[in-house]
Length: 466
Image (cartoon, rainbow, N blue to C red; front, top):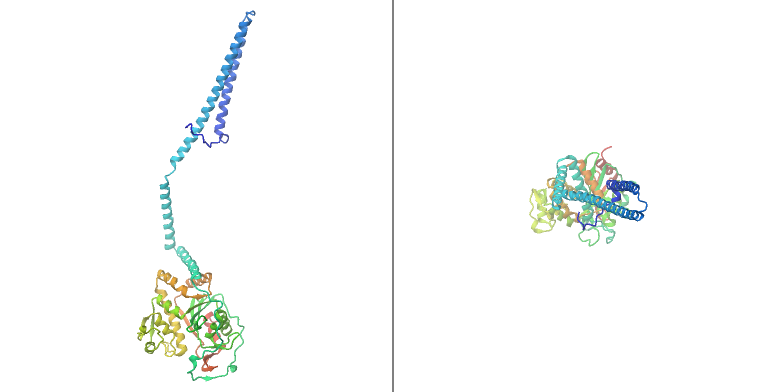
């Protein structure tokens, strides 16, 4: 042990082995002293008996003094021996401790080896986890769950909320597009509306999301009219995806306002009023809404890389000779199946004066076109890689306005994935033969639905026949 090493933290009182050896050495030294004193006493007694000359007192006193000095020297020697023994014991114990510390230090790995080992262990764990995620069923499910959770957070962060207090609009009828109609004008007071609770039917196995396309051209900062109104349904009891088009020109009751076209409800009172209107007229409670205006709709289609759409000869000619395709350089469509860009698809979605491939004309044909477009988007989704879809999502989400939060989005996405269906069923309301057309109310060209019949048809389609 080095002498300069005075910073030892060894606790002598707490080491049993040291204490035991220490006290043994002390006992041994003391016992040796006792034995020596006993021998010396015996020697002194013998010497006293051998001193027969009682007159030589001075000699005996001198002898006694000499013996006392020798005894004192012997005691001092013994004390020195004790100190030496203690010092030796302490040194041996401390050296033993230092040796132990040295051996521990020798066993410690260099820092670079520790880092290298940690990296190797980390890589092994990472590869094992990647194997678990990629090649096992539980891992695939966990990976999907992680992606869905992340998707929910991205959805909540990037989508836009509906404006709470947009600029108000005057409650007037939109007559411009109806002026040329020669339909019969009827008195709205002659229309009989059935009494409905107005709460809307809801079943736990059916999620109903409202899809809206807003036509806001010329509306400034105010809300526009919703020319595309579709209820998208996820029915977990049937494992089915369903799209129901609600025709915008249906005359409906709007709480707090005059009877008007369905597409005017959002313009007058936003999403809350539109929810109330659909619940009152069709007895359906909606679980959320997603809206895209026409300008962003065009951008979304372009971001998807266009859509495969089949045009009739009449549709192609109409699109090439009118301003429905707003950019003249894109008025080059042809009859048959082809890829259309965003500007062309938007023009196609707005056609009313030509029959579609389903044979429907006017607003009936337009709602069919809306469902054709949504089905084409769905087909595009099925053939696009997950990486490309993630990239598209980041650019598309800021164009979407919704009241669906991240948690509900995750739930809906989970539901859709669990259902595992890739087919879409479609319906249009009002159904064929359940409405009156070619009539006007306050100058508006409208459809007057038979509510009782349409509610029954709608509920059978969405919830399943009872």
